[in-house]
Image (cartoon, rainbow, N blue to C red; front, top):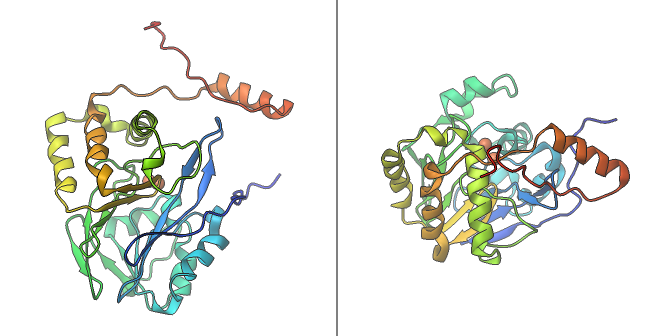
Length: 289
Ligand SMILES: [Fe+2]
Ligand SMILES: [Fe+2]
């Protein structure tokens, strides 16, 4: 058996979401049912083109082809790494090699955490911490920690020219299939999926002081956001931005969601062996409530 990651079977082509701004798309099927999760990154093709996160190793060939169908590798001036998780840093080496004129926008701590997987060229690095900005010719990009995150190095990115905010892992959710923006999903499914994924991805949410969290969310929401793009969500257009933040503000008041257990894995293996579709049903809470 090969342990190499499985290439996606379906190609979801780049999607223009704002002036000069393209979403690089990948969809991955969840093991536990007919659910899909996006694994996006971004290309901003201004005066000084920027690649925001670098996709997954599983989608390497297609990701590189998609990115370089939009921008010539020699023209790329900035590669912004939001954090060092594999779905965001999966083609870092390849893109740094392909784009010799690009600086890598990272942090000291990201380098310390990720240096076992990538040999950071310090002379090509720029350290941009939360709140710092950098100029890319015709726009200023500001790094702002998103409301929720799953790595201590996470910074979102706000483009002041288009009002696009890269929210990294915040607003993540599973989907029944592809959709260009979140208006394609019923409101109930949006809320349920977002609550479940954001609680799982930031399990420290139960430790939050709700009042402090409100102020933390305010910091992002007060940006003049026209479009939210994130790694694991369809685009959230201006009309739905306030509703998205409203859902995120509920997170500290929720209970941790159930997660699949060993019995579910046994059932999944049985379904695979017998050619049936497995659909995960969460076990009822122990107290029956
Ligand atoms: Fe992450
Ligand atoms: Fe992620």
